[in-house]
Each structure stands twice: as structure tokens, then as C-alpha cells.
Amino acid sequence: MQHTTRFRILLATIVITAITLIVFALGPLLTAPAPTAVSTLSADFPVESVEIPAQQGVSVHGWLARGKPGGGALLLVHSMRSNRMEMLSRARFLKDQGYSVLFIDLQAHGETAGDHITFGLREAENVEASVAFLRKTFPSERIGAIGASLGAAAIVLAQRNLKLDAAILESLHPTIEEAVDNRLKLHFGDHGSILLPLMLWQLSFYLDVSLDALSPITRINNLSAPVLFISGTHDVHTTQPETERLYAAARFPKELWIVPGARHFNMHNYAGREYEQRVNDFLSYYLRPHDGG
Image 1: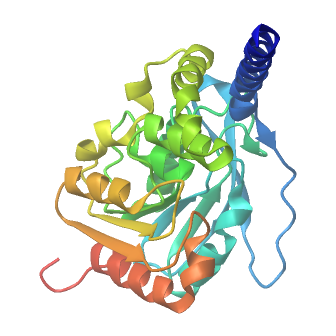
Image 2 (image 1 turned 180 degrees about the vertical axis):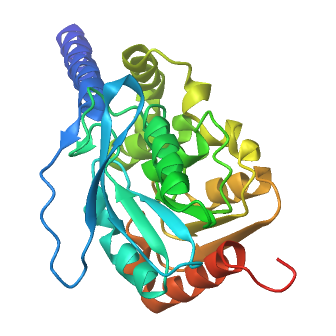
């Protein structure tokens, strides 16, 4: 009996130690950069390659496609561990609608340099620089932005007032705690929440910031632009109630679209023409002159 008890204690100790080591390894992996070479676009969608000076001597790499005068200009910002190619289908459809589009690689992604992924903190500096670039390039146009997950967080966490005329935030988490907890549960089951304090400590340590600085809901009320929130009913990375809390905390004017059946993936690819209709209706109302606007 005593031997069995000692064995169980030893086994539990080994399991706990192994899980702890895995969690400590996850911290550097979560923040590790995700550089990729971005392929050349086909000739049927001509773009200009741009490098936008940003803070800390980093140049933000991106593509610019010019639309029609008066059509409005948009910044498109990809999700975590992705690059500007994620926004290509959106760029094509928006360009066809007459918008000018700039889609970029966030820092530590694609071809934009960076030592760590920072969950929207430094990425927000890329957004600030890119919006300034659009404003300088298209001084007479209204400016909007579309961000997915990390890209949406980067828009909301911007320290400077972006003075956007419209913003679309897709699959955006309200707090970093919930974002990490949901992913731990996804990989380790409901017991994954036990690891949450250790993971959050690691993120705060590696990035040298408070967790509030990484939580969009603490800054969503500072976003003065009209905003459309998009999320999926089956998203386990950012749940529907979490999106609804963000929506409730945001300023008016605001809209909410919960996409039936959608998970944490490319909303344009999933919802297709309905996505295009809703997004174009929202953007054209705020980015293009109209009676009473």
C-alpha cells in the first residue's frame, strides 16, 4: 500500500514537472517571430511594394493597390503568425469596389522585422505608421481599417488617436487572459486553466508589460471610429459572449455581426458574398460622401 502511494506521488510529480516544462517552453514559442517570404502576386492584381518607416528603426513591408478617387482608403491587418497574404481576398474584393487598399506584414511577421510577437503592443506602432502613410498618400480620402484577431488588437491598442473614419474588428479577444485561457483549454481540456497564471506571468515577463496593456477591452472606448464587430458562433478562441462584451464597451456608432457556424478563421473565405455585402455597406456609408454624411 505504501509502495503504491509513493508510486502515485512520484508519477504525479513527474507529470506536473513535465507540464511545467512544456508551459515554460510555450512562452518563447508564443512570442517567437514568424518570418516568411511573401510570394509575388499575379499580374491580374497589380500592387506597389511599400516599406513604411515605423518606430525603433523598423520598416513595415506591405502592398498598396490604388482604387478610384473618392472611393476611400483601407488598411488591412492580418492575424497572428500569418502575413499580408491572409488579406489578399479581401484586398481583391475591396479594390473591385473602388477602395484603395494597403495590406501589411506586422512586426515579427512576414517580411517585417521584429524580435518578438507582442500580441498587439508593438504591432500597434505598425498600424499607426501605416495609417499615417495612407493619410499622406491619399490626403483627400476617408480612411478605414480592417483587422483580424491580432490585427484587430493592433488597431485597438494604438496609443495615438488613429482618427479612423471606420473600423472593422474580426475575431477580437477582449482580454489577454481570456485569449490565453481559451487556447489552453483547447489544447489541454478544461484543466488547462490551471496553467493560466504561469502562462500569463511568462507573457508579462517576456514582453515587459502589464497584462492590461495587452487587453483590447481596456482601450476599446478610446476608438472613436464607427466600428463593426464580426465573430463566429462556433469560435472557441474568442467566444460569442466575449465579442458581445467588447461590443457593449465600444462607443456608438457600432454594429455587431455574429456569423452562424463560423470559427476562428478567415471570415471572408467563410461567409463569402454575405461578408462582402455587409462589409461594403458599412464601409461605403462611412468612407464615401453621401447625403447627410
